[in-house]
Structures are given as C-alpha cells and as structure tokens.
Image (cartoon, rainbow, N blue to C red; front, side, top):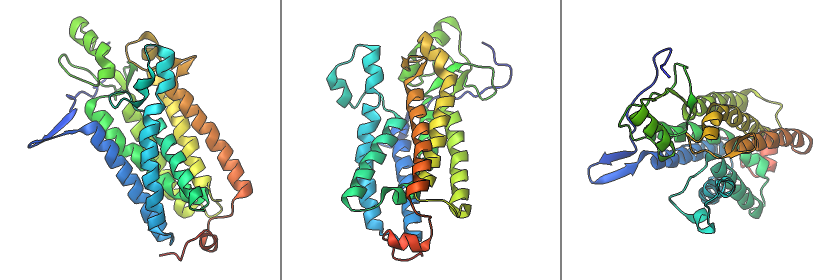
Amino acid sequence: MEPMFASLSYPPIPILELGPISLSLHGLFAALGFVAGAALMLREARRRGFDPDLVMSMMMWGLVGALIGARLFTVPAQIIGGGYSPADAFSLTGDFSILGGYAGGIIAGGVRMRLLGLNPPVFLDMAATGLALGAVVGRIGDLAIVEHLGSPTDFFLGYMLRPGYDVSPQHDALERLCTNEGICGPYHPTALYDMIGAAVLLGTLFYLQRRWVSRHYGQMFSIWLLWYGLQRFLVDFARLEAARDGTVSDAVIGPVTGSQWGGLTLSVLGAVVFVVARKRQGLVHTENDRDQGARSHA
C-alpha cells in the first residue's frame, strides 16, 4: 500500500551502545517509566503529608507485582494459541504486557497497603498520574524498537518499513513481506497512539488533581482505569485485522484481541470503582487526609 501522505520511517534502535555497555531501549524505558511514575506519586504523597517510607514500601511491592503480572497476563492468549508449556509462564524471553504489569503492580501494592493498615483508595489516587506518566515514558521504548505495529493504513502517522529494517520480533512476517514482496506499509503505530492518549490522560489527571474539589478518595484512580482501559480497547482495533490474518503476532480471543479484553475489563472496573468510591469514601481534603494518616500538607 502506498502512503497517501508522508509517513513515519526510521531504523529501529533495539540496543543502545554506551562504550562497553549495551542497553535494551525497550527495557530501559520500561524501567524509566516505572521510576518516573513512582517519583510523581512520591512527590504528591509528600505534598499532602503522607509518610514517604510507607509509599516506597508499597511501590517496591508494586514493582515485583508488575514484573510478575506483565508476564502472566500473556499466558491465557498463549494457551489459546497453542504450543504452550507451563514453563513458558516464567520465561524471561517471552512476551510481556503493559496491562498485566499494571494489574500485577496495583494488586501487589494494594496488598501491601492492607498489611500496613492503610486505605488503598487514598494511595491509588496519588498513583493515578504516575500510572499515566509511566505509559508515556515506557512507550518510547516501543517506538525505539518499532513494536506494536497494526494494520495497513494511509494515515499520515503510519510507519513505513524499509527493506533491511530489523523491527520487533513480533513483526517478522511484516519484515518478510517488505523484503520479499515489496509490501512495506505504512502500518498503524499503535504504541504511538497509546503514548499520545496517555499524555492527554496525564494532563487531564493533573488538571483534576488541582481543580476537582468534590472528588472522593478512589475517584482519580477510577478515572485512570476507565480512560486507559477504554483507550486500549479502542486503539487495538487498529491492529485487529493484522492479528486475525497473522501478519502480527497478537492473539485474537473471540471477536477482539487479548489486550482489548483486558482494556475493556479495566474500563468496566473503573466505572464500578467510581460509583463505589462516591458512596463509601470521604471527600479529598486536608482534614480527611489527616484522618488517613497524613501529618500535614507541605
């Protein structure tokens, strides 16, 4: 397919060479995304007077949970696709899922909050902007290695492969089409779409954090759940066709991809959390923060 307008095209950069050190940009920006999100949550906790040591403890549990969840979230799709063994669930060379990472991190962090006798909605609210920032930073790594390409498009942001480009292994079929048959795209860059959506979500959450005076504990987090889950559900339509015909290695479960099922679940959960938080949690303000363990606002 020839592009109707100018399209994006650049050689993938899977490895960054710094003298004797070789860094995977995909892994590097995933780590930087977690660090950036954690720093943002920690800044908000300090601003509102919460103990930073407790927040750090939650985040360490969240990090371990995120690593486990990112791997395990891909298992159902692999089982459905066949050729799967139980040992694959613990392989470090398999696929990882950002949605699974979020789920595992939130669950593990929530368990730690309960063990510390804290109210999870209070701290999950403070994590909402960090979760959005983590997606923005983490997706830079996906763009660097050219991962998560979707179906052919004539959209001006489409990514155009070139013969000899070594993109993410999930796109080996697209590489063969480009080299052997001259079919090089452009293709939907769904990682870029997700990064743009996460950036808009981040700005929205910053605005709500300062201006939404009638919010209840848990509702900021519910906005993140609802928005990001719906965003992933919609963005993945841009690669559903390619997943169905096998030109990209995304699992299709019923009418949509596995990631779309995860995104839809996330958004439904967000709607439920929004309603439940309004009924069961107090309003966010200084006095209630003190009741929840804050010393004082900075």
